[in-house]
Image (cartoon, rainbow, N blue to C red):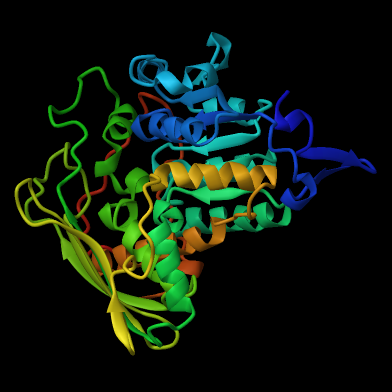
Length: 417
């Protein structure tokens, strides 16, 4: 019997009451039934991490836009030679494989306790909102959206998840990496004094999902989904999709505060202006300012392979400097597994209650704020982001839906709304 059928909710005086983790402590032997929405490379690995971290968790439902992707990744997950320890936990029957643009709705309507959201980030606000309405606990891959309208929609659902005491764990795995956790705790206890400045870097190799180009059988929308990293509406650009991690650490170190304004610059130097490389930049540098005057300098860049790389944070305090990890203890536990252990313990009430929805949503908005500053050439404030009408989502969805990607943003021509 799964947790959803026993202790996660009950009817009281005609209304639905969600039990808090504190009320269900001691139910640690109950199974957790999970659904995965977005069964690509990240979704399948999140499944492995969940099942590795909790032997009483099971995958019962999978949903994806593309049948070939779903079936290929399910075979990968069910490969006993590759994943021998988790085979008894993969229980996806043919009728519980959902395909199409409404596949997420079928997953939410199931009896699962937990939903893993691992589609491209453009869908995150819609899917998270649906999960919370369905009273599901959530593992939500980062980032939490690609535009201000979507992130504010996510924030509204985040408030509801807190009210319902639902567990929400994000794919910001540094928040579960022991050396980061202990170092940030030391910083917040002022071991090195007040924070004076922060630096965030993601300089790495490019993500090219479809190097051979477009299959002529694919319509516009299918193509952009298959090559999602290269399109702003669905991927968010590098600063949102990857550099998020470093910016989130800095916001976390600042006590889960967000900057109040930013000025950024960027562009595309080596990325060709073609369909494969889409309409994103290959570098953005940003100067953020927090409400107390502390500044964060962030820099993300994608170089071709073989050139410089740097993925790191640096936090300068009154009495010393830290890289965000060196005041803590190294742990052999994989942080991608650690976050799922913390997730299931929170759901069962055998560990601390966790809901990172709002904090990680604010880090997502921080990243989008810098992107919009770089695209427009303007200083952008938090207040502008919270009032922005920028909504990048298509108005219609279909495999053959025609949709022309906007051109590469040019400061002075691109207008922030």
